[in-house]
Image (cartoon, rainbow, N blue to C red):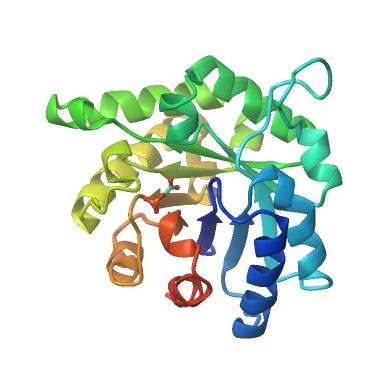
Length: 249
Ligand code: PGA
């Protein structure tokens, strides 16, 4: 049985001052429970603030929205996996659709970022998802499985069994359009099958999250969809109460 994961991607919201207030409010609102994993993905500049705000609470985790492929060096503007680790992060999103489609991140880079994460003791959540034109052209499975295979290409089967995947159809991100639970289930089943093909029975250990316009109104039906092990949430996680309600799903 995979433990449900609720991951809140703040994107470029909540600098340190807002992050501190948000975490204080969430910590007061949320009673620890051991049956789920809750992860906050603040912007890099707020990561240490969020870790600090959590104090001794081990029921809540923190991750970075992105890392670079190298551990250090002349890469102006980038954050490395060792820096995330040093700041108290445990997870990292790799290949989020905005990284791919706004910043031009390639499949090859996602593979190197997964390697950098693992090398430094971070758990990558590899994000995959098709554009609307891919879906309309019947290429959803091709695109998603290409991104999946490419992103995992440099990892051993044992390592793949320890990470997480997030399926986020690009047309559903920040648009208010959500995949139906049935749409999500079809792609989640494709992902699970591909994982099984490459790592056998250990594929059962890999959580596959759904993301894209998840909110308090649809979280329950998406979580109930066959094969959905958790939610990756953007807009609806920015408000403490709505995020707490989603995490309660
Ligand atoms: P959204 O973002 O919930 O605002 O659609 C999800 C994501 O990008 O991870």
